[in-house]
Amino acid sequence: MVDYHAGNVKSIVNAVDSLNAISRRVSNASDLDGLTHLILPGVGAFGFCATQLRSSGLLPSLEEWALRDRKPILGICVGMQLLADIGEELGEHQGLGWGGGRVRLMTSTSPEIRVPHVGWNTVCFTEGFGEFGVGDVADFYFDHSYAYSHPTYAHQVASCLHGQTFCAVIRRDNIIAAQFHPEKSQTAGMRFLRGFFAI
Image 1 (cartoon, rainbow, N blue to C red):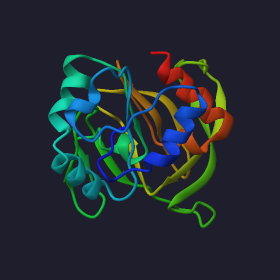
Image 2: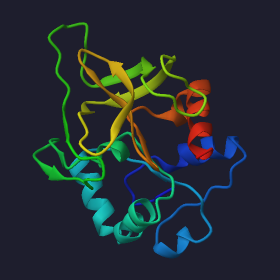
Image 3: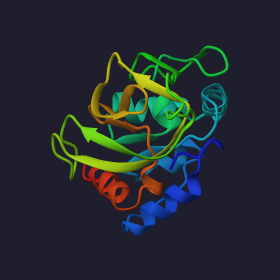
Image 4: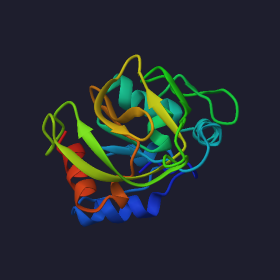
């Protein structure tokens, strides 16, 4: 777990431990030694998380991991949004650019559709991933106001509908990202994490 003081690391550690994986918090480059998979969490505003990640000093090592060595990395919630070129939360902020595109505020034309989008919602897999096949649906837990759509370099693996259709899971080869919280999504979340660790 990448620990850059902008993520809900403890709950993710608990979820990973329940899968009998050995977890480690990564706060400097040397912590990456011997690891096979990385998780990039994120809680809070896009700009804050992007600033925290850059100031952590970890970014060059993460780029080497993901883009040069092409090892598996999973972005969760804002950790997914950081893959965009630009996030529009509280002004425009530069993301990592690994997936391209923008993260924009979700909109609603109905009082029944509330933003922030908090709670359980159905995710439809448009591409197979791990234990999920094309056309499979499962409920996952969300907590966000901004959403990723039309990534430039990544492609959509699963979508969700909440007033608008948005990317629930995207992938660029070894880079996977989910808008939902698998660590809070019970059985479906564990199935998703198992798929990531199988890469």
